[in-house]
Image 1 (cartoon, rainbow over the protein chains, first blue to last red):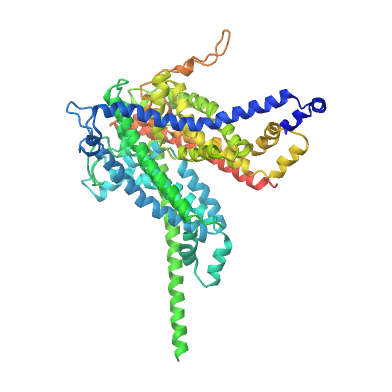
Image 2 (image 1 turned 45 degrees about the vertical axis):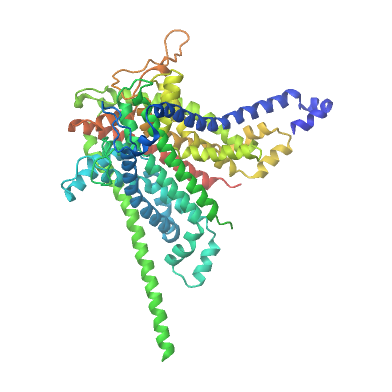
Length: 310
Length: 308
């Protein structure tokens, strides 16, 4: 609009449409553009920083060793740089968390979206949201000092640090994310599709499982992927409750370090900038970023392929 | 006879499906109960352990080697100062980016890249932001283990939350409001600053509060920038008696924050320190619950009041 007034400058000048005003508008637009650009710059900076430090790291350690060595002892004299023990810890704890969070989150979502009366939903939704807002360090405290002693009653030989209790608590922690996104996806399915199903004599359960869930599949997949990347990237719960000892194991009853816990452990000590120990946390971080990125891409593909448009 | 049998069969099928319907209803309620009970267990466990430690002196003492006399003074002051830095940097940037994407951005590939990027940023694990802050702020920009570095790290972390909340709030404003403003001769920025921003303010505020609540409890990025130290002093005061009255020395000061203090206490073997951890956790949970509760309340009121 400001542009058009510019050609009509004599009349426009009287009305206050001036070149300065045009400039002012352009300046603001530039400013807003730059703030939008910041998000891209952050992403580039993250990747650049991780790749740069990891590149120096991989000058010392071959990628083959990194991917196949079965020990991760970068701070010992006999240094081994195999990421597998950290990856196994991450996968086991995430798997336990997902076994808890995905079914429970989905059941809660179906219940809230298809079964629950209005008042229950109005209370339960904000409550779950509050649950999702509790700091992760508090969940870590809860896992170490409440859940582990509880599990030790059932399994007396369970060590004080273990993947099981960290994974379980992490699962509970992720439930709100999964349930609220799944529920949103299910509520977005138009009512007439449900009514069609009810008219055929289907129960609420049949409608939810056979009609609403397939229709909301892309949104539900997005919720699951978000849950997975939360579990993989979660730090404090595992750092506190699962111990920080790298351990190549698939047994959830053992203590083991995850990728994130290792980064925390190194950061706790004061490693000199530029040392190989310092670079290991960036290599570990890059591995973590690639894992979460892979899940995000899978989620994106699922969303695109199964998107239903009404 | 045959129809009767058929009817019986149909009834059996219906009863079967109704039974499943009921079973699922019970399962759903049970699942919800698990979430509720976990929260009750978490909160009561912390309350039993931590409540006796929550005295006035707990808030006014520095951390100490003696669990009984240790407190969270440096932690809550540090959290407050870090949050100021985070809010001052993330809020203008996030709102600016949100406004650009909703009101200004042309529909082209670059805009799409920014949009996908914001969603991806929201999914990046928080510890990765810590690594970025460690490499960029602490070492390359030589900010050290300072309040400024921590505040900026957390600002990066909550930026996507603020952007997404701003976009959502702006999107809910009907196009007629903009057309009305343009019809009266307002420029784009006048329309945005006089109409779009004020009308979307409650929605944006909700997002900002949720983001800050997340930042308060975030531990991993702050540990990563190497801020886990024993801090038994306060940063220099921002207000001075002499000219120019304001000092920004505190920005570069070493610090500790609430979750770090709690982590410190949790990782000690002595039981007395676990009680301190419980007390600090209680303060932290009450703080985040209050902030999230405020955000939910704001949204609830907004939904009731606004009728375009």
